[in-house]
View 1 (spheres, rainbow, N blue to C red):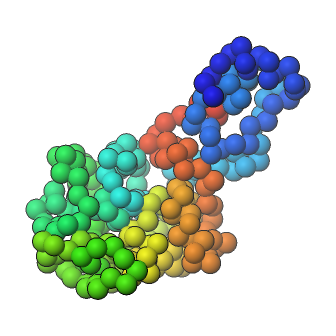
View 2 (view 1 turned 30 degrees about the vertical axis):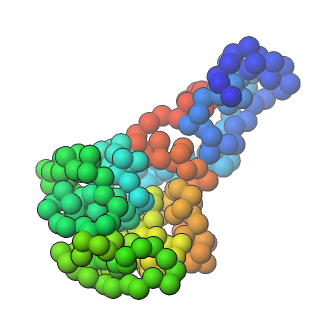
Length: 269
């Protein structure tokens, strides 16, 4: 799977034209998608790869504004480069999921047993300061659906973000947050979304993510979605056909959001 030129030359003997239509692995330089382009006279992108890049460039390169990014998922550490890159480009940044609690903790809130990366608190503060300096509207949860443990039959409460008890954890955004996030999404002209806003796999913690799908659909905005969990959540709502584009790539989409060039795409020239 490494970018081996000798192997690529052997592969190149099998064809006169090389077409890469595998966006999902285009962030990994391999003999079959990168080195091979040196040895085949005609190389091109397939229609899926072309669509992926064109939609992404339309959303992040020259977007209709306001541009709203929805970034969710469990950990800030997984999305550091994404946050640092998109904050230079977006008008609004909506942050939910487990990672929101690291930002809330950085602002001095008690987050109870919620997922929180204490080693990321300084970085979270820096990102919040950067957003303020750039006049980016940074939206965090104002309330949460909490439980003592994640379970389909969990005893749940909705509390203000200031009132999470020590032995409870936030597992979804609450109704006031859904309203605020939905407003930011409905008034957008372009939406880029990566990561769910709660533990949507369990019914008590699914409303936040599902309601934001409704808001994205209602906005009429160009909406680009990437990441396996987000893709799954949107398909669960039955509204995937109302979303402008759902990326087939998880890691590849993330690397584009980080501002990186995908080696297999660059190799096509």
